[in-house]
Amino acid sequence: MKKNFKLMSEIDYFDIDPLKFRGRGFFKKVETDKASYLKKFSYLTSKKNFNCPLCKNKHTRSFLKISKNYNILECRNCLVKFPNVDFVKNKKYAEIIYAQYSKLNHRKNMDKTKNYRFKMMTEKYNFCILENFKKSKKIKVLDYGCSNGLFLQFLITKGINCAGLEVDEASVQKLVKKKIKFYKDIEQIEDNSLDLCVLFDVLEHLTNPINDLKKIRKKLKKNGKIIMYTPNINSLSFELMGPNQNQVYPFQHTLFFGLKSINYLAKKTKLKIISNATYGLDIMDYFFMKEHLDKKKYFEKFRQFINKTQAMVDITGYGNHFRIILQK
Image (cartoon, rainbow, N blue to C red; front, side, top):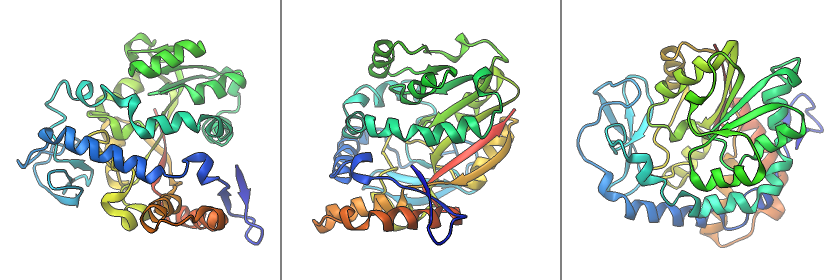
């Protein structure tokens, strides 16, 4: 999926087919999910002052208004962003929010596009495994929040010793059917046993990421690594799309990170940041929104423009996804 510019060979870009990766009508599907959740769980929002769920600072301010009741706030200290929902004190929060998770349009959409996404796992494998480990066949990998196990399936074809961690029952059934090794509790894993733990689009769902990363750290060998993909809220797509950005996902995405909040997270978990870069889908997601709003088809004509312009956005650090490598 990775290619070079013809005239700028030192720059790579991802040659992604938007319609195979997301599917036409993606924006409408996400907006339908969003509207459903905003209506169903509006009772969880509050107008009271919230302490930052990451650093516990009392000073916050409004960052992005999503709806009449649902807002994203910003901590004035660590700059992490979070909704006006008390997900920290609500012990049944995950149970409430994810009860029908597998039935959401964007989850069904991922299943529909899984064959195309599986082909894209080569790039993920190269970045996470081959670029970080010389003897890849001897490492032990955990996919934390592995969902339907697509990345694990790919690792198995490469002879990698791997397992997943997943609590969503619908996803667990898929792992069982595929005969993929998985855990439901990280305490089932031996301390100091993992070379790598990956979290793909998981960090933003956690309600206590410091606690989660500390638990993962215990399971890593000396110099073991954690690789996280998570939305960058200080990105071009959030700038262009605002509350319509599909990564908002009301009530599901609890924390939104920028550079300062990532540094704070690493410091509190005693993990060293080895690298941090952005690779996004800003231009693609913006065109999905424009197709919906303008009632026109853009992707057939603008695919190359989208992919190559995205590479330029990523270089600036404003792509809508971070790729963070941490080390014990």
